[in-house]
Amino acid sequence: YTDHAIQALETFKSKGTPFFLAVGYQKPHLPFCAPKKYWDMYDRNAIPDAPVSSPPADASKYALSKFGELRSYDGIPEKGPVSPEQRKELRHGYLACVSYVDAQVGRLLDALESTGLKENTIVILWGDHGWKLNDYGNWCKHSNMEIDTRVPLILATPSHKGGQKSKALVEFVDIYTTLASLCGLGVPDQCEGSSMIPLLKDPDRSWKSAAFSQYPRGRLMGYSIRSGHWRYTEWIN
Image (cartoon, rainbow, N blue to C red; front, side, top):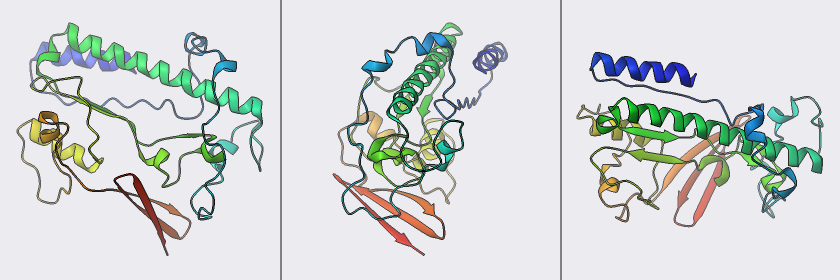
């Protein structure tokens, strides 16, 4: 897949026309398959377990899932926790897949630089959701917990200083608005997102007071608000 994306960059370079390229990697999604090289980067016995491996006290019964996605794989028990050996193997596999995808992203960025497109290209990288690896004694995603709804997001432009970090709350809904604004395109009135350009100029500036997410649980919808140090979730039929 990365090979095709690199070929596309070379084609864009030869044509000299503006382009938009979306490259989506499935990993580190299940199943945790990656070349042996990336598994060998880690000592399984040195990989720590989740820092908090039991559910929060008095948490709603809707807060966590039964991680049916993982249970659909061979060897995973239909009920109850996974074994200590399985926990180590799964955490090992997740890290291997992350390193594998990291290498693919590196190849793409190298191609962007070698073609000379880096000087006039905006790059944004993000994950679509978080992932539990025995966190709260749970696995997979499918919840409104912070670990599921908080994701990596990196934005680089040729005209803004790199290597900066911001503690500001941003949301996926901001991505379209930001990219359209950076490219000098019009933003449709129905877009609800906020352009992140001011944060590129001043990462420490005042910004949104809250970020929102939602995930269903059967007939209920869980609505979450993240503000300051706190997350509040309400379940509505």
